[in-house]
Length: 143
Image (cartoon, rainbow, N blue to C red):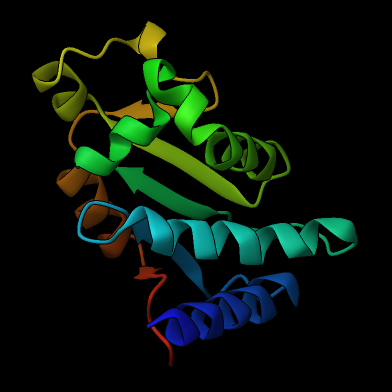
């Protein structure tokens, strides 16, 4: 599985960094794990040293229990992950979005998440909107 994720990251990088705007990707964290997200973040961070950011960043959707890793109260345990996500977001490699419905159900307010995270009304609905707009899931290994 880890090899597939790294292969997918390389495909993402080669398609988007080569200036081909045909492919746009999203990463839906809810059915996946933080380990899978960490592998993608690590792979993308390797490109920070010289590659141009993609024309369209990888959209990361947070709408399950794993989203707790990005809540301010859990920052200390997730510092490396959150800081790397913030850096990649700042450089245009990713665009992180969190489900406002999940936040409300879990007693999390806008003030409880880092400012680089955008809120969307409903995470699964956002995933569907991205699919309809032509985005591909980032875990695909062939296109």
